[in-house]
Length: 161
Image (cartoon, rainbow, N blue to C red; front, side, top):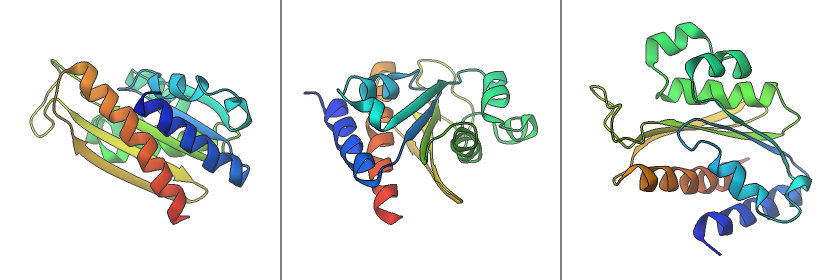
């Protein structure tokens, strides 16, 4: 089993113990987190749904990320990651959510946001946690590292609740 599937399995066990549902909002990862989760037999017991909101318009339409926030901070920001996670929580039956937004490359870098910049959000009830990291490597590597970190971060977030 690869590391992403191992993490998804661990997340599933933790969610099942609590009787919680997870929902995801993915931009940079393009659904790979949801795929890793749904590769796990029985994941329907703890996974509600996943949004792939690649465009700013989809972030606004489906996750209620304010256009003004996107204009002010850009899609790759902790502020937007937080709103993506909160919007996913508000628009699903999930108890806990995660979000990813970033620049996988090879293009797309802007001043202050190099290729590999990724912002994460995790939300549960009224609590939200965000993080910004910069990963090294090619597009595939950045996306894989992002998916793995999102699930590791979810486990850490759950431990703090």
